[in-house]
Image (tube, rainbow, N blue to C red):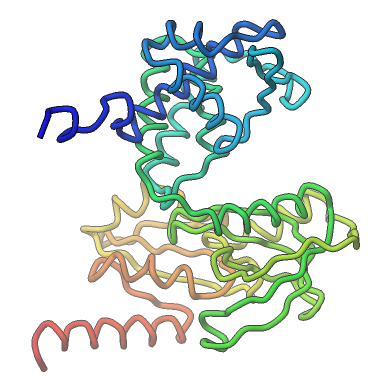
Length: 337
């Protein structure tokens, strides 16, 4: 067995991270030549790869990353009509975007080609070391598994959101009636990611419930954008509603939350603003009395449990009872009682 047969063709056997970095450089070169375009053979020389690989990367930019590529008479380029106007960032602005991208990469659960394309374009605009940080982010994201079904679903929801169109889908609720599905007809107001659940959510008015509802995107089945349009609420009204959410859910009744943090946990609890409505005061023994008005109890419950013995729920009674029962069950599991 020869070395080439054992290890494969070096031009074929590349990691996804190497490929992502090369695609970024490919996009940079193709955009730089403008309307005149570039031949795959010339691109191959610049990249230090074979003509076949250069051609394949051009096709990948078009089919996998959705870059508007054109080719005529053996020359390839990027159609400017399919792109938004070029942006110029200050160094501080670019740093802020890079840090946001790094944070996003830590929470991403699947590879998103649109995000990869956006970061590739961003990387081509930056100088070192920011460019390397973006390339590293693209490489990190590209190692995640592809989620074509999730990408297709999100694309339908996003189009409905951007175009102000009503969307219909089947939904599988996790809490109200697990194991069943229902048909929903929704006015999409927002699409929001959650760092707590590492999921994306659709927030909007549900005609079938005649109320604002929150839908986890990966529980949405067969979304369909309809011809019907809707009137989007004013931003100030929407922000006022969403401000009540602990994380994403803003469609539940407001609950007054009162928590006493122990003196040992008080400093950590007070150094972060956890919710827009929160107020707090130190007590004589060094503990912290923390208050907020939050939409529902589901999301704040996990946060309270995360403090362990450092937090005691004083109000509402339903949350206090739930947390107490959960901690008793956990203690029994560990002690074998």
